[in-house]
Image (tube, rainbow, N blue to C red; front, top):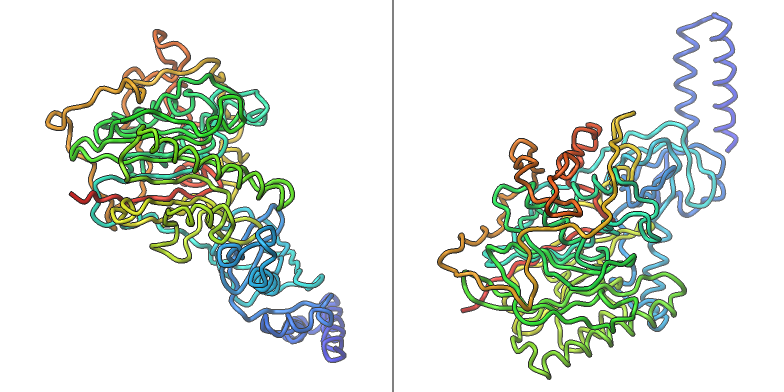
Length: 538
């Protein structure tokens, strides 16, 4: 302590002579040397053992640190990625597990909070070495200059799913509302929605799936219809359509299906697990699909459980009620012979980690949790600096044998929040477009309902989409390759009216900043999509 004080005092004296223009170069050299000696070099383990004595002093942490979370004015750093304790041990609401307490305490010991300028452009996984900052409290540091981070760029290559017949994408698109101005979409402007549509449709196309199971859509058919139309407008082959729910639009979130009609067609009846008057009335769907080239069928249960808002006990009680309702619906569907195919996938946003009671209840009901079967450290969400998988995939025993892989694609979680569609950094200055919000359900062609879908002939349909391989990469659709506005499906409220320039999802591109164009496929949501490969056993 006294030695560092001596070095600081001596450096100040030398700087005085520097300003007096005496011994200019000599004083500058000595001042820099003594100031460097005044910074205490420590490892993170040494600092953790004695935060109190380091308070108020500048330290250089020699331990390499990883960015685990970003906030408007600070970042969360740790020696390694931090994972939610509930992924490996039951949480407090599930029985006050000793393992949970141990893992939570370990995460608290490893993490430090650094206040620094402009942290919003950092991706999760960025690294920093020899971090120099002032200690302001226990596990808290501050610096007036942004450290030299080595930013992390997630791979743009799609994960390899092996040889597949069908690729299913489970994605949370985070409050995708077509009708703006309601309670749930009050803060979304027409320009932000236009960019949201462009980003989501571009990202879904880049994932090259046959079936898209989407959570957090606007209740009704308008949201999946608009996304299917945007995907047709941006793709060369088209053919994307949606499962019509025949329910009125509403200002609440729901789930929905968009699929490639050249590869799949709906079969059987669309079932809802929740009663019509419930707030969960369209958040639990059961729908069968037939693979057109092979004739094989499978059933998908798409679900969005209640969020973790409120107390842990209250949230757990409501999520368990959702799980009971979901399992009862599946049991009735098979008992009444609405569906007889044993190949069943359960997927969606379960708002629960691996060791929490809702997930364990589904597993004990005979369904295998495949979320982390391919990668034990798979994650789809990050909260408060900790990663975990809120989005999950379960399979019946017969379906489990046909799933080749389940892997997340990190389009959102790892990317900085300023790339999101609601960020003010997306549009060039003074060029924000003036777009009118849709006021009625848009049309999309072609569309088909589960009850009236006409089977397509396998001989006349195009060949199925190629299986995803390790050589596939993410690429945003080129505006030059997209069809003209007049030939793209109309997203306006009237099917007879000619589409306006703003109907095309690529119309918004001319207003984007260069950074927004580079990040077109990324950060359309807080959740990462999951890709599920299926290879039918014939």
